[in-house]
Each structure stands twice: as structure tokens, then as C-alpha cells.
Image (cartoon, rainbow, N blue to C red; front, side):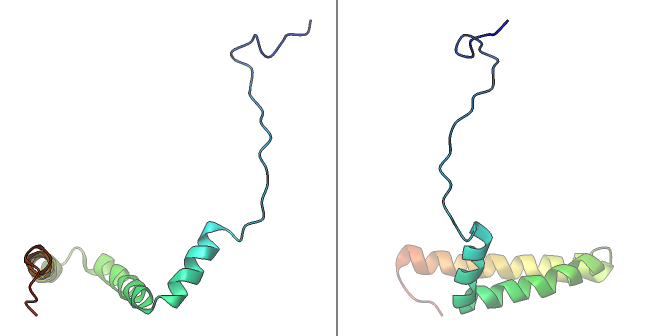
Length: 92
């Protein structure tokens, strides 16, 4: 017994998807990142910091000094940036 797929709501729907040749999202992202020197330096800093932070995560020094001090420094930088952008006046 053949069933009509148009009448069966549970039948899988197949569609033709046109295939275009693309170098891929990651390849395009890497190519753009290579031309962006600030992005490459930022990526290098994060790549160096993450294993170090993971290794030191349980120590007293990391929790008291690095985590709190780093958070305070990031908050201060963000506050200066916000004031500079909101009031359109350079502080640094």
C-alpha cells in the first residue's frame, strides 16, 4: 500500500538545497583574524592566560589577588571607557 507523502504529516520532507563551494566559516574567520593584529594579540593573551588561570584557580593568591584585583581593574577600565564615550571627552 503506497501512501501519499502530502497527506502524511509525519513523512520526512526532503528539499533540494543548492550546493555552493565555500571555503568554510572557520577558514574565513581565521583569514580575517590574521589580518587583524589587535585581534591576534588579544587571542594570544587569552590563550596564554586561560591555562595559567586554570592551573592556579584553587590557590589563595588567585582567589584573593588575581581574581579580585583583575575584576577591579576591568571595572575601572570599563568605567573610564563609559565616561569617555558617554560624555565625548578623552580622559586618558
